Structure formats: structure tokens, C-alpha cells
Length: 341
Ligand code: NAD
Ligand code: UDP
Image (cartoon, rainbow, N blue to C red; front, side, top):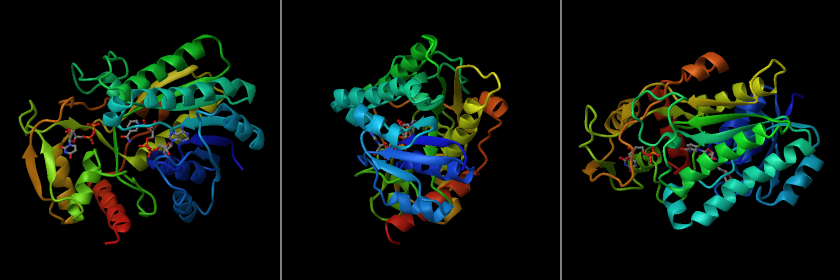
């Protein structure tokens, strides 16, 4: 067995895909998840893909005693990937304390216990939202951090600061902070994918649900932006590509060779796609037409943002590989599976 890794939030969307890639790379995985936004059926999917059922602890990372028990029961954990967080931007505006408590207490508990249990490093899920509306694109890791526009976004900024301050204090740990652009798609087996709760806020689940007839039409939020076709631009990254980046980050962080104690990487493709371009990629990849209408702008939306991923490409030796149409086909196959089509 390879090194033991704790994956918090490991039955969630990005976590489950990452557990698959970690196991396929030979790591031994322990998951902790409180199932607040996922279910334990995901473990069956992971097992069906990899042939290995990861160790699973149903528990809440905001409870430090639960984490202590976990580290005592699963001795020898070398690294942590911390996905566990609440992530709905709109809800975070309504319930800010829930977001600060969940996202920050989870991180603080993990950091506090790492030296005690000999855990060497933590990979943290951050987001390109820390850049706000960028002054220029593509955006690299040296770009300024802009004031957060939601409590959720603020938890990511504060989390980055907490990790930075803790490492600077001389704590015997390393950390890699990964700033994700827009993760989309599903595993090519259609055995795991994204399980949105209620009406999706994000573009791709709304799009696939509309294509499946669950929603009447997809609303494009604004076609009067300063972009070539007037709709907003994002850097959509395949979730399996994203999962693989965590494996390379973990390998680097736990390697002996003098890497910095804290590193930050943008994870994106380097390609900006507009909302209308993404819809058209879906339609041509799947031959399914999506009923749509152009609606007003969504409050708080960023006009355009895409990544300069050179640092991740060169330093991690990782590159986004999956073509967008394949990502769209996988997203559709997953939607068909969960809606029984
Ligand atoms: P997700 O909701 O699918 O997964 C998060 C998992 O964490 C869920 O299974 C949930 O049940 C669990 N969880 C939440 N709080 C917990 C707690 N206190 N204790 C134990 N488990 C807990 O979300 P995701 O899309 O997979 O996101 C994973 C991480 O990546 C999050 O930190 C998120 O903020 C970050 N991120 C996501 C995106 C995106 O677009 N999906 C973009 C940037 C960053
Ligand atoms: N979007 C849209 N219709 C929807 C959902 C999203 O036009 O029903 C647009 C949204 O305005 C943004 C892009 O799709 O320009 C990506 O939105 P998402 O919420 O998925 O990600 P984020 O805004 O966090 O980058």
C-alpha cells in the first residue's frame, strides 16, 4: 500500500473524482464526510471504478474530537486534501455564520491536529473567485486578490491567510493551495459525477437538466457583456483533469526535494469559453438541443476570467487534457444515468 491520505469531503463532487485518481495512483485513502451535500452511495461508484472501497468515516470536521478519533484509528496519515466546505454562494449571503463556522473551523481543526499526528502536508481547495473581476486575462497567481463579494468567497480568502500565517509561524507542515477555475463534467464511466441539491445554480448542471427535460429552458444570464458574443467567459476545467492535479500536488508536497512550505497554483485550461460557446459545444457533442432564452444579467457575475496555468503546467507537470466536447458527453452520460433516461 502507498502513503495514506485523508480526503475530507471525499464523497462530494470533486472529492470523489480525486479519491478515484489517488487510489489509481496507489495511495491509500481515508474519507471523512458528514454527507451534508453527498451520499454514501458514492462509495459504490468509487469501488466500481477502482476495485477498492476507501475507508469511510461519517463525521463532521468541525468536531475536533471526531478528527482526533479518526487520526488515532487510521494511524500514519501523511497528507490531507481538504474539500469539506459549504459552497453555495447565494446561501452564504443568507447564512454567513454557517459558512464561516463550517469552512473555517474545519480548516483550523485539521491544521491544529496535523503536527500532533505527524501529518506532513495539506492541499486546500481554493477558487479563482479570490481574484474577483480581473484587470486582465489570462490571470496568473501573482494577480491581486480582490475584496470578496460573498461570505463563501471570503472563507476562501481567509482560509488562504490562515494557512499562510500558520506555515509562517514555523508549524512543521507544508501546504499547496489550488485555485480552481470552473470544474465541470463527470467520470467517463458515468459512475460518479455532480449531484446538485435542488435547482442548480451552476451552468452545466442546469444545462444538462434542461436537456433532460427536468427544466423548461436554460436562461443565459446576459448577452450584453463586453465579450465577442456578449455572454460571460469562464475557464471550464474537466473534473477528472482537476482530480489528477491533486495527485501531482500531493506527490510534490510529500516529496523530500526542497519544495517551498507553501505554494499556490491556478488550475484551469488557459482557454476562456463564453456561455453561448459552451452551450454550442454541448449541443454538437451530444446532438441534443437545449431550449434557451436570453435573460438579464445575474447580480454579482464576473464578466470574464480565465487562467494562466503555466505555473501548474511547468512546476507540477500537470496540464488539462480532456477536450471540451468529451467533457460535455461525460456530463450528459452522467445526467442520463441519474435521471434514468
Ligand atoms: P461538494 O459539496 O460536492 O463536496 C463537499 C463535500 O464536503 C460534501 O460531500 C459535503 O457533504 C462535505 N462536507 C461539507 N462540510 C463538511 C464538514 N464539516 N465535515 C465533513 N464533510 C463536510 O463540493 P465540491 O464541488 O466537490 O467542492 C469541493 C471543494 O472545492 C469545496 O471546498 C469548494 O468550496 C471548492 N471549490 C469548488 C468549486 C466548484 O465549482 N465545484 C470551485 C472552486 C472551489
Ligand atoms: N449561467 C447562465 N445561466 C445559468 C447558470 C449560469 O448563463 O443558469 C452563466 C453565469 O452567468 C456565468 C457562467 O454561466 O457567466 C458560469 O456560471 P456558474 O454559476 O456555473 O459559475 P461561476 O459564476 O461561479 O463562475
